[in-house]
Structure formats: structure tokens, C-alpha cells
Length: 496
Image (cartoon, rainbow, N blue to C red; front, side):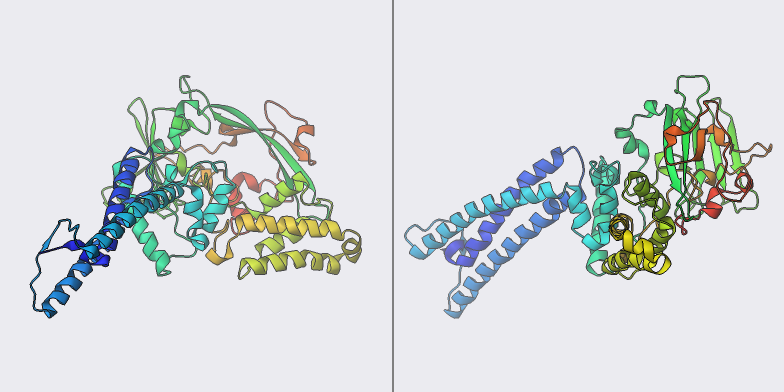
């Protein structure tokens, strides 16, 4: 009969088992009492630590095997027992080794595990652990209104079912990154849980009302980069307690239920809408000439309309180059009096670059080369402003373009609004009607009123009218804007 701890490898394996078990117990308690679910945090607890314990068990079994083989070579048969042998120096040496390593392991694994556990809750972990893969989402999140909201708050949220789904999906993502089988650009998470379980944890539905004045300044593609400003009153919505709720958030302010069917993954093609009203009546709206899926088809999803159907990019906003240039000019980061700067900047930003370093070099040098060829006098006397403009364009590029992942505004449609993508007009295009010929409105004034518009870079200097003024489109398109969608011309791939 001999003790299990007569071999030093048994002491090492046993200490790993003890340290891992203590850390597992502590982190399990922390995980079960956490207010939010985190797949990475739980990955350490339920996969990392059990793997460590299993490693200790393997080492322990190897130690037993070594002792058994050695005994058989001597013609002995060994029976092990968990007992202390204080008279055996070899045993006592390994026992103290076991105790010392156990204490050290508990302290180190506990500290490292807890710090790692905390790290997995951070946005930086989600965005930077797989740097190339998640860089577009991480950078745009840092520049978004939700920069202080942790990824897991929206992508997972509370609840056991989504916790389990996140574990399964996390394993798929780890496999894809390890073996480089992920797409470029990444496929969007179209199956996010309903907004009522995530967005509305902070954005209280009963507060979705009121009006909001917004201003914007646009710069033309002419030599002077001519500024044009607009003052817009957005009708967010009347209070749900009023008799006639209206406005942009009408869909959310009433007890009416809006459902729809999309025929594409990005939900841009919507041929069927159903509105169940509070009085029990039902309105079915379809688009003429479009295929309507069978409602009893199990593969057809009838989706309840919620926040994410318009605000589909609340935290990962890839700005259109023209919009980013407009803001930079309005703020003075781009000298708006540099001739043809808007056109040159758009050309440089929209060019295809193999990687980020190439983009930096081509943009930085390209703007100066443009002026050296088109206007040498400007290139000579305003070189400092041109260089500052080039750096501003590089900053815009770094915030919105990710060539390694083939991701930019062209790969990420934004449904909030209707200028560069159909957005609102996916349903409100004036063609979707019911059997009686009633259409879903596309009256501009149902969502916003133009208070003032005109030339100049200062919206506050415009003459305004609270009853609204008629929209006038820049250029020579006449009244085409009344019969065509904005996105027909301002297509997402054009960046303007």
C-alpha cells in the first residue's frame, strides 16, 4: 500500500485540480449573480476552467500510471490509498510541493481568472480580441451614440435562452476565426432579439413623442463647394395618450400591431404589410407586381415591426463620404474655400485600396497631386491647408472604411431616413395599397416639416416659416424628386 502523492507529478496535477476547482466555484457564483449575460465571460468559467481541471486530472493519472509501471517492473503489485505518510521523506516532500502549489495556484488562478472575467465584459475585448475581424464594428461603435453601452447589452441581453444561443454562436465564431472561414464583409446579425427586450431597457416607449429641430449644411461639387443649408422639424410623434397619435414613431406609440414580410436577408424588399388596429380591423397592404410569399410557408417570417427595422445601425454607423465631408467642412477641419475640394475628396475616399497603409499614402499624396495638376498656384500658396485637409480625409477614412474586411457604407445599409437607401420608402413609397386602393402614406409632411432652406453655411441665418416651406432640390432635376425615390439618385454605392 502506498499514497498517491509519492510522485511529484501527482502533486502538480492535484494542485491544478484544487486551484481550478476553487476558481470555478467562485466564478460560477459570480456568473450566476451577474446582471448581464456575457458569452466570453462564461467561456472562461464553463470552458476554460473545466479544461484546466481536466489537465490537472490527466497529470494526476499519468503520475499513477508511472508508479504502477515502475512497480510492475520490480515485480510488485501496488494498491493506492489516500493517506498521509509522515515517516516517508519522499512523500512529505511531494506533499509540501502539493500544498505550496495549491496555495500559489488558488491565488494566481483566482486573480488572473477574475481579471480575465472582468476583461471579457468590456467592449474592447469584443472589438479587439479578433482585431481584423471586428475592427469595423469596434471603431464605428466607439464613434456612435452608444459608445458607452457594452456589446452584450444589445447582442445578448438577459435571459437563459439567448445565453445558450450566444454560447453556440460563440463557438461557431471561434471556429470561423481559427480556420479563416468568415466572410468579408461579415454577415450581419439579422436575428437580434426584439427591441422591447434590449433597446427599450433604456429607451422608454412612452417617451417616444415630441418634435425635434435639426439643421444640416451640404456642400456642392462645384468649384466653390457651394454650401446649402436646411432647417427641418422632425415630428417624432404625439403622445400615446392623445386621440390621434402620429409622426415618425406612430408605429411604436399606439397599440396597433404592424407586421411585415421581407423577401431578402437585409429586409430591403418588403412586399407585404399587415396592420392590426385597436378597433379590431385589419389592413393588408401589398406592392403591385411583386411576389407575395405564402403566409403558411414555415420558411416565411412574419416580423413584428420594432425599433431595429428603422434604426438598424444604432451603434455601428458607417458614414457616407459626402456626409462626413460636409461635417468636416462645416466644422472647419476641411477648408471649404479650397477649389473643388469636395469633388477631389470624394474621389479619393471612394477609390479602391488594397489595405489601410495604401489608402493613407494615396490619400495623403493624392490631394496634393490633384492641386499640383489642376491649380499649381493653390498648391504652392496653400500647401499647409491642403496637407491638413489630407489628414482630415485620412481620419474620415479610418473611421468608416476597412479594406481588409471589405466593409464600408456600401456594405452596410442604413434604414434610418431615405436619402441614400430606401429606408422609410421600403413601405412608404406610395405604391403599397390594400384591396380598397388605400395606400400607406408617403406624404413628406407626415414625418417632417421644412422650416427653411437656402444657400449659405449657417442654417440659423435662414429665413424660416413655422408652417413649412416647399422643398427645392439643388441642380437641374426639376420636380423629379416628387416622383422618384431619393435613393434612386443618391444610391448608396455613390457616396453622395
